[in-house]
Image 1 (spheres, helix red, strand yellow):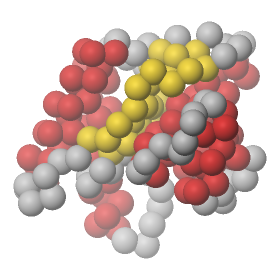
Image 2 (cartoon, rainbow, N blue to C red; image 1 turned 30 degrees about the horizontal axis):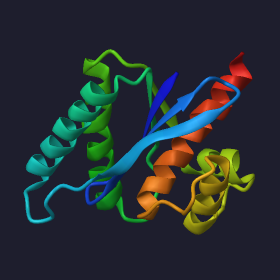
Image 3 (cartoon, one colour; image 1 turned 135 degrees about the horizontal axis):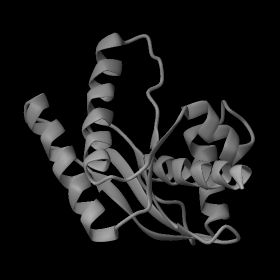
Length: 159
């Protein structure tokens, strides 16, 4: 099974492709999607949509795992993040790929055993679990990997 996982953002979206056969998971690809900061919001959302479509075409994943919106004090930031998630989810829905959403606390709990783990702790655990030589950078990428690992851990519990 191939899992396409995303840590959405309007500035930087982290992504990873993790292949798993239930017993073993391996990282196939990872990176970031960075819309131009000076572009209008609609252009940035379209860029996200188009780049996710390219990755869907390139890697043909079986599922999309995406981090759910966290609730922050800044309503405008949360709404913009929701729009970014929407453009990502729409791309996967149009490709007829199942979409799974996970709350940030659930992702951290699944990977670190602590729902309040720091981004650095998540990066450390992802590095160990996937047997990487060094922690992936930026932290948006390790967050995306954690979302994928969360999906894999959760899907095992349904078997």
